Image (cartoon, rainbow, N blue to C red; front, side, top):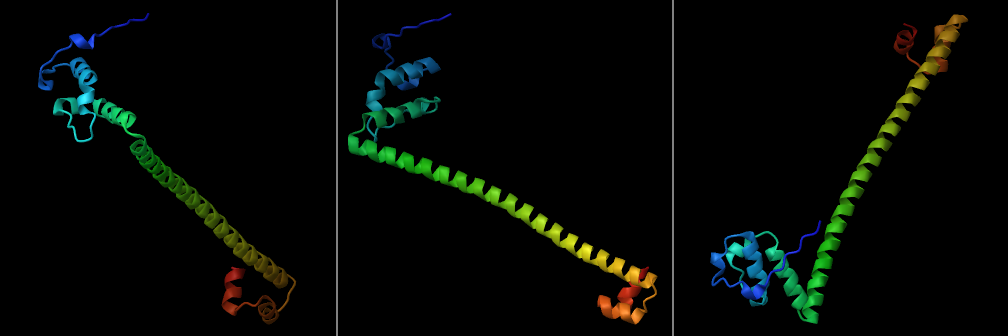
Length: 157
């Protein structure tokens, strides 16, 4: 179902913006008298500023009516703001990604180092136990494995 409403702005005649009671009346007033607030130095009445969207509509109107050099400056400023926001967003994402990668790499390196150390200790332990099992004397084992007597005793326990 479609419903159309026609508004004749010529028939809308408030004498002051302060008399506007409803949202609809504020928008009608803005649409009818927007050209009065077009210049940059013109100040929009407080009750119109409080209405959601009117300030944005006024800015859009000023931008549309601006002369070519001014419009280009406005568009360049807006583009620079969007570029800066995009740059910050991209940097934030890159920082998060870099942090995740560093954390994973550090974890992998630590795991590899621990594995290598444990492997070497297990290997030495097997060799020492094997040598002890076949009756090789302690001094030969100490020299071959590069261990101290205390380390050999702790490995054999």
